[in-house]
Image (tube, rainbow, N blue to C red):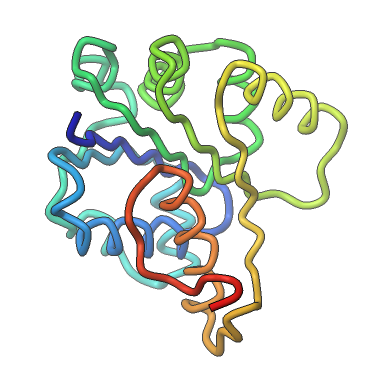
Length: 186
């Protein structure tokens, strides 16, 4: 099966992760046949605040409104096999954990889980409270993957982008894509 990937960007801090994820996926075009993006209004505001631009709409991908339930990845029949929420707010995590499909992000996550496909949540919060931890447990038990936006430093990154890319590369590894990045022991 060729990969169909849905990216959801929520209002959590960490717009750099979404930016780098989309840009890296565009360089890996030979590994997917569809790439779709849905962003909340809060995500757009956080992007403007953190990155100082409105470039979130400039990428050559399929964009969908947060309430567009006609988007292909709102149904299992479209066979989107990977969904990445980057960054994932605790509110979005909680709604996914509770099965509350009140927008395209949570509906698509519910679809990916019910179809037993890959859901990767790049949660972005610190510290966690017990509710966050229980919600992460619920999503994990349902088959999702929790990948906190926690960078690594083995590769000795020297820029903010290089630090953030350590997390993006880990997410792409979890998605099953072939990514050229630093590997421990090499």
